[in-house]
Amino acid sequence: MNIAILTFDGFNELDSLIALGILNRVKRAGWTVRLACPSPTVTSMNGVTVHAQMSLEDAVHADAVIVGSGVKTRDIAADAVLMARIQLDPARQLIAAQCSGTLLLAKLGLLGAVPACTDLTTKPWVIESGVDVLNQPFFAQGNVATAGGCLASSYLAAWIIARCEGIEAARAAIHYVAPVGEKDEFVERAMANIEPYLFA
Image 1 (cartoon, rainbow, N blue to C red):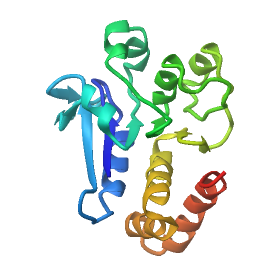
Image 2: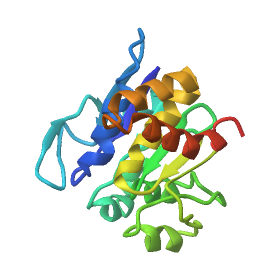
Image 3: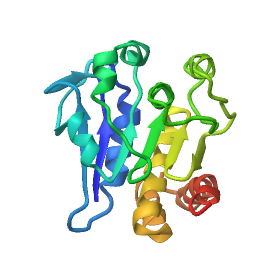
Image 4: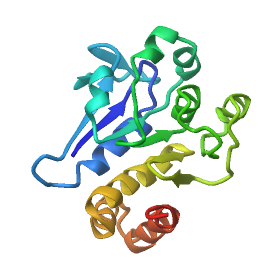
């Protein structure tokens, strides 16, 4: 299982790195989670620089892709050359977007008439692009999922794990990262958000 997290300059650390951490709780041969970036390094909205582990073009070969968010997403969405480098196919890939990453899915034509989740800042831009925005943290239809709010990145990670490794694997991964003393409650909340969309 090859998972790519699209991560651009100005990225939100909570979106890319929380998902990366939770997805890497799966310890199975062949399970890889990597940051896919448009350049060898990208710097976050708070000045954290990370190295690309794969290119945007490599994401076409991933089994699952998360499109992260950041403060430069509107610029990215308006950059035809950069957007052309993102080639995703929901017929053979799980595709998930976090917050303003939902705007990129909309601009790529991957949402169509499907409603989506995003953060409150990005909401008007997603609506402007012709997509209905839901007032909830997670939604999925088929192989495409969206989430709104930085900490909802845990729901995207759990959804991918559940789809690929099963519900118990997803529960175990969320349980591992959940706060001590709140683990059961945390797991149940996460699963309650994703389970209605797992096998519909």
